[in-house]
Image (cartoon, rainbow, N blue to C red; front, side, top):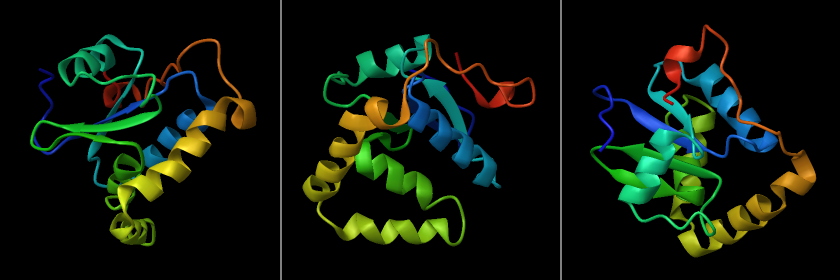
Length: 138
């Protein structure tokens, strides 16, 4: 399994999705405690986690949150767990975790299903700048 540095979590995202790319850039900007590492679902590391957890990428294909301690979080739970770690006021988004997952994921799935149509798609995964390279796993 993927060996992450202690107290780090790995955000797996759709590397060709413009919305996902923008979301990762937002998290990087607000991750003041440097809690997260990143990789594309399409990367070797992404494929390793997908295989290890038997994830059906036809059903969950936009964001995952992985940590060795807690395993994998999916969809709206992953997004909200990330937000809770980004400091005030973003951490207040955690209140939505009280909403049942099937309701949250219905909204999440609607956005995920339309993300390419609404936000566009890249030809290839994002290449991090030299300053950000240390935050990305390949």
